[in-house]
Amino acid sequence: MYDPTIRTAIEVVSAILCFILLRFMIKPYKLTGEGRYLGLPLGFGFLGVSYIIGALTFSEIILSFRQLAYLQLFARTFAYCFLVVTYYFSKKPLKNSRIKWNITLSLLIVALTASIVPSIVIPEIAANSYQATQAYVRMFNLICLLYISIHTLRSHIEKPDPTTIWVPFGFILLGISQYSLLIWAIDGSIFAFNGALVLRLMALTVFLLVSYLTFRNPSKKVI
Amino acid sequence: MKKIPRRDKLKIYGDLLMILNNQSKTEKIILSQVQMRMGVPFDRLKNYISELTDLGLIENEHSFKLTEKGRQYLIEYANVLDFMRRMGLSYR
Image (cartoon, rainbow over all chains, first blue to last red; front, side, top):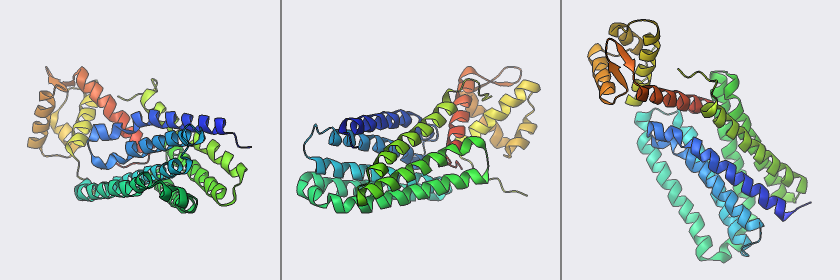
């Protein structure tokens, strides 16, 4: 059964979790000052924004549902893109990757603007193309999450440690959640839809636990 | 011989602080031993030490030791590196 109140509540909780995570995700960038780690806070920030837009869309406060849903779709896709490029560039030597990172980030920002502005200026575009766009966009999101899951799993396999398995697990949960949303977008299965929301909350909780245990565990002997 | 990857200053400072902190717990710090562990030329090591002293991260009374600011920096540095490792991000 689909309940808009529960849906809105889940979107709000997801957004809160993302904005809490943002505080932790910005730390690598703040410490190293390297642009390539900026994708991590940008990614979780955009995810949070997409959930806020989702909450507004499904609470029916604002009536232009299709336009907002379109914005939400793209905000989430760019969130995953920022995460993918950060993971991609984190493996590259710093010396060669700085210019490439700057170019990639600029291109992503241009692409983001180019995808979102038309739907704001001409709302009919968003309204007419939402249904067709969402299946492709969700498939693209799934590919992004697959890449991040493989990347983090490989890092875990290179240096196996019980503490490094949780993040790939979280991304795999997000990937399955995205897959369930794809099924929902295609055949309207409400079971897939509810499963996707639960899996998303589980994934964000995993990330939050990992961050909290790293920075807040008083028993951890750092020095 | 295994090639040591290029490190930026941040990593060098972090590694140096960690070595100085570990050594100061057990023995008097001998710079040649620090140099061996760091894998940098002696004159460059002396430059790094003087930079860390200027930044107020270490002090040289009878032997080198971390200041409170240095200890806080090291805790944050170790936490962030641990977080990046857990997130599956490499730092090189």
